[in-house]
Length: 238
Length: 308
Image 1 (cartoon, rainbow over the protein chains, first blue to last red):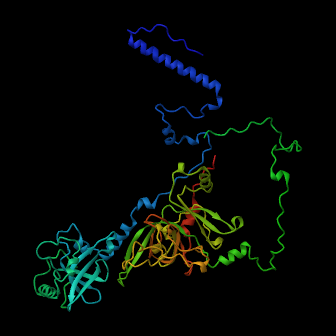
Image 2 (cartoon, chains in turn brown, red):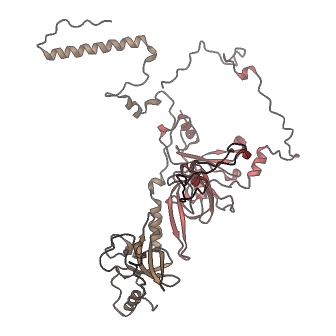
Image 3 (cartoon, rainbow over the protein chains, first blue to last red):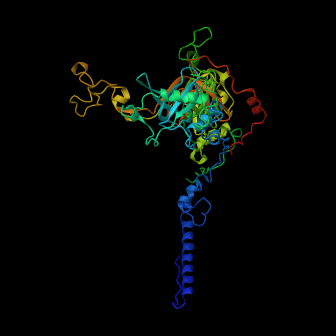
């Protein structure tokens, strides 16, 4: 069915012209829709008319694929432990540390926020549950992904033989860690002081320093410095 | 896709009891043409005869010693850490496995399927990403949608658990041993040295561009003038199921949903691990589900509305 266009279009009246144009276009659309409806019944949409501003991607987002199909009930999922506890390893670590380091002495001694922490280059004395205490210059503090496995590497010269030992700071076998002497001079410019293995930089034995420190502690002032390194135990004669 | 229209019938057929002679179907099928094949007489299966080796009875008897008595669970590998023993100061490296939304989805019985097993699911999934047949399965069983699904074979019906039971971390007890199955980390296309431990060639002494090569692929004419099938060569490595047996359970926490096992478990962080009682250790005495869970289930389990 053809549409007879309006004959007169006064160009002077722009508003009316636009109105007439719009009306013509609407008429065209309606006629075309009616034509297709009668000619192709199988192409009729079985879906509700699209919302204004409809785009094909919206059909996918609106999940309109199951209209007209039987609804399958879906039971909601139970609460998730993975969402409630996204990092169980951190929970496990803090649980362990509450028994291994209840007053946080060890944590604070090596914490980056503590200005008086033990650093590489300091001479540390490690007291063990069983065995001789070991002292040496700290050349590496290994704090990897797992905080419970933080360890220090101490280097010493025992009877002209260089010995390096690793100590896990949170191990129950380590009963105490003390700072014998802070690094002299400027702070070490590296995190790992492996250059100390070279004879030029090797400080040798720290026995003398340790002995002086222990003698000083026994007779001298009560423990004040060291950033709360030890657990407050009175030191017995070695 | 638009819904299919049912084919229109030419005429309404009266019910069978009124007119039995009218054929119901206009279709020809195998069953309409032929008679079903009769089952063979079980002349060789009798209480007086020895059990036939190809029967379900014999198969289950063969496996009875290595099938666990109870189900396992699906867990996510969260990572590794270490546990210290306060008395002995011993450090044990451990893997943390977390159970997330683990439920029993279904049961396999000897009568229907020929073996006893539990279908267990973990995690969750978007409903629109699950096919309708799968969604129907979950709706029929009355359980929510699951991302990971696996079967756990059990020895007999005593190890079966009602559908819908939540499997929590205290399924396992501290001190018991478990087997962990997971897909190992994929190494991609790996060379001979990594894949099979070939020794390669010298690093120096005139060696040119051939430090990690395979070398020879076999003898010559005497070995068939060919490379024998199965020759170890470079290729894809990893990404396959690996079972690590007899891992000790160091710690169990029901609130965190974690089972901490000593040692390493295959797969990367975040992978799904099948955890079940170790077959090479004495079976644990633990009974699952515990009484309070059974009571709670008997009291009031929400019934799912039947599919429309």
